Image (cartoon, rainbow, N blue to C red; front, side, top):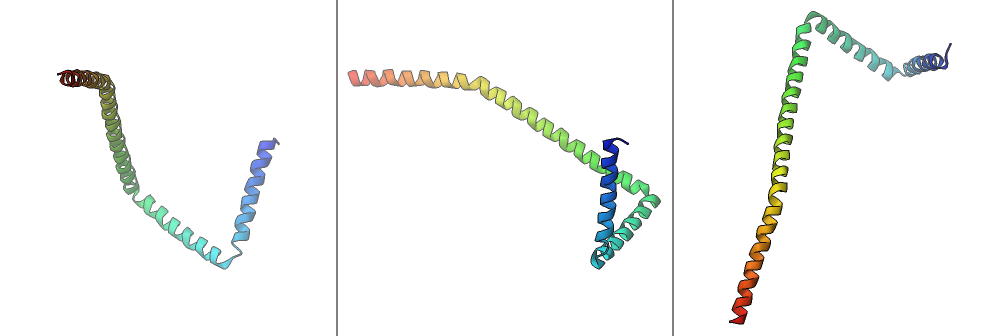
Length: 113
């Protein structure tokens, strides 16, 4: 038997022993029984009406798909705006520099007069 199989077997045995020991506690045992009953009840309900689960899953998938599409559109929009900003920023800097030069010349002319 390979080491991997021995490890997996050991883990399974350890988990089974741990579960058995934990069931020695009365509260844990009662909670496990209650949870088992709830799970069994839900499983029966799903078996009787699988379309409910199927519809719920389809609805969640649709919501997720819509959300992904919206986020994708938002990212695309922001990317376009960043590109526009990158294109216009150098132009704005040049306009501001030109304006500064014009005002500096005007101020210099006023001071000379």
